[in-house]
Image 1 (cartoon, helix red, strand yellow):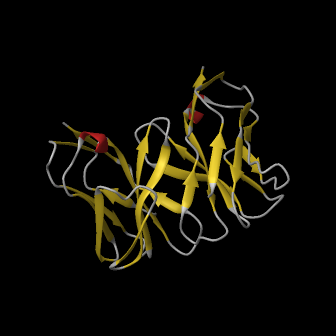
Image 2 (cartoon, rainbow over the protein chains, first blue to last red):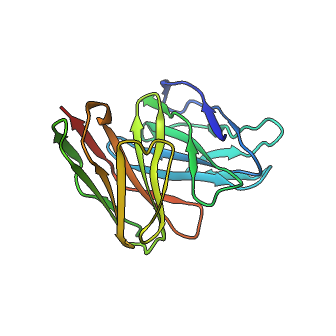
Length: 113
Length: 111
């Protein structure tokens, strides 16, 4: 079945540091890939997505590129801020489903001033 | 603006009680979902509904049931709550695009 593996946290960075959160996946067909973010005390919200190989999703300074050859969708940001502190979830929607998202376990990011 | 609301942010129940968690969306979305979120396990799908009165089991439906009598409302029911159902419960809805919109969550504690 479909699965998502993302790097274990927690990740602690200083403000303006470079961020990478690794995400790899296993899926049948041609999945769509997502990063969701959960700020403290809130539900998840979509951060970015990519629907086909070599697509790059971007939002709020975050980027991720859909790499079919390495089955990866790593999240990056060049300069993190304290307000980026949150839990980040990588997810996929398998090619055979219109509905179901499969999530990774989440990575807690803490950014210190 | 998109809005998914859940009836309670925090809930404390006793073992054996029947528990109702309510979710309402105002976007006229066809699809609605219930997940539970546990540390180290991420989000796991309990049930989803793709239309009124239609439902499908997710990955962990045991011990839960759902009801969707109106398009905007999707209820999760714990028939007889147990301590291993202590968790954060997240509702989401989805329209014709790929994006799921989440509510703020209900943190349920079963004593």
